[in-house]
Structure formats: structure tokens, C-alpha cells
Amino acid sequence: MQAVNAHILLHDVRVDLPGRDAVRDYLALEPTGVKVFESNGPDSDVTDRSAAATLVVGPSANGVDTYTLNFPATPGFAYVRLKDPYSGTRPIGRIIRSDAKVMAPENAWLSKTR
Image 1 (cartoon, helix red, strand yellow):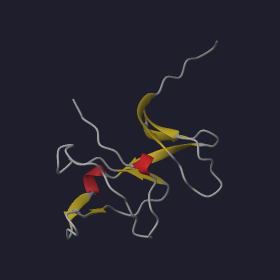
Image 2 (tube, helix red, strand yellow):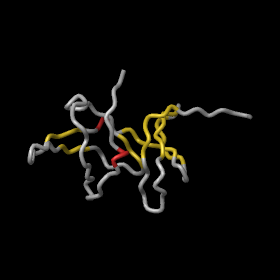
Image 3 (cartoon, one colour):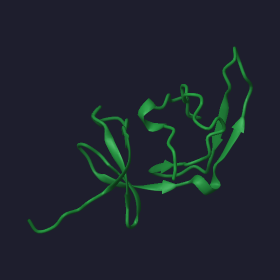
Image 4 (tube, one colour):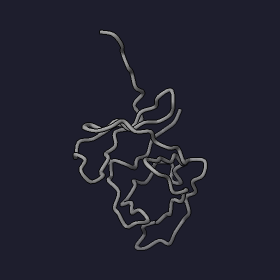
């Protein structure tokens, strides 16, 4: 053994681009920032857009609240970390991007920070 390369796992995700597999990938904190490690592909940098992101309350329909997450367009992969307006008391529903693509449920989650 010549080296050990440990990664601090942030969360399982799924890169669902065309031509990728359906196996979960993982988002990890590296000394240089956040990366996504794909099960069968490249390791890619992920841009943190948290500081530029806003969560806007939208209309409610049938008791379901809607929100719009806004952040600058980003080439490649991006992530946002924001405060949960419900403090973990409600699950995340379906997420639809501005291009009408439904996001994979693995790619949005609630977590606690200590």
C-alpha cells in the first residue's frame, strides 16, 4: 500500500446525466472543496452556491407549500445548503428544475448541523 485517500462523505447522490448508471454516487468534502465521486465515471468538482441562493415562498395548493430555489446558473455540478423553513418537521416533496426536469430524490435532503 502506498497511500490512503480518505474522503469525508457528505451524502449519497445520483448523477443522472445521460449515459450514466443508476448506481448511487457520493458527495464528499475534500481539502480543495466538494467533489462528486461517480460509481463508474469521473470525479468532478462541485460549486457551492449557498451564499448566492435564495428560497422564495410560493403559492400553496391543497395544503402543499411550494418554494422556488434561486441561484446563479453554474456550469458543471452545484450544491446549495440553506436553512429548512420547517426545521425538519416536513418531508421534501417533488423537486422540478427550471428546465422542467424532475430531480432525483437522492439529490435533495434534510440534515442537521452541529
